[in-house]
Length: 107
Image (cartoon, rainbow, N blue to C red; front, top):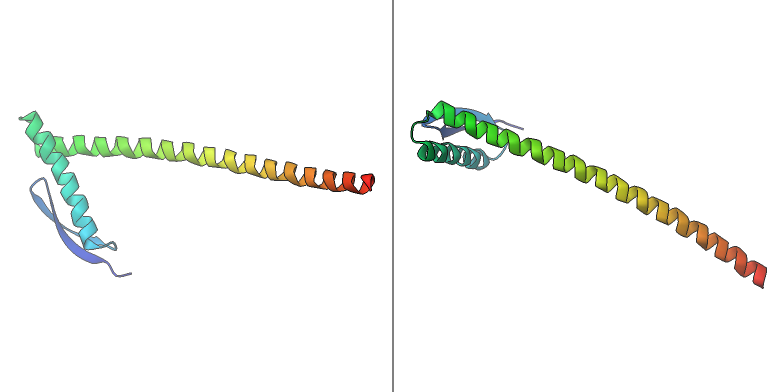
């Protein structure tokens, strides 16, 4: 897939990046990050763009870490559900065989 170049602006600095995603997606991400940085700077008053960028990075890293832990928890729950379903199917099949045996005996 061909890499597309797109210009983004974050914290007042324009960057040209290469992406294999839709350039609009890269722009949306940059706008979102820039908005967070600007929000932190407005709230803090005396914070530099670099400090605001670092705080934004930490916030996103925290979100990613929490989402990864939650995803792992969900994968574990799914594995348990699949194991339970397999066990239930096995028990159902066993009971079907037992019922068929009893029907033959009772004839």
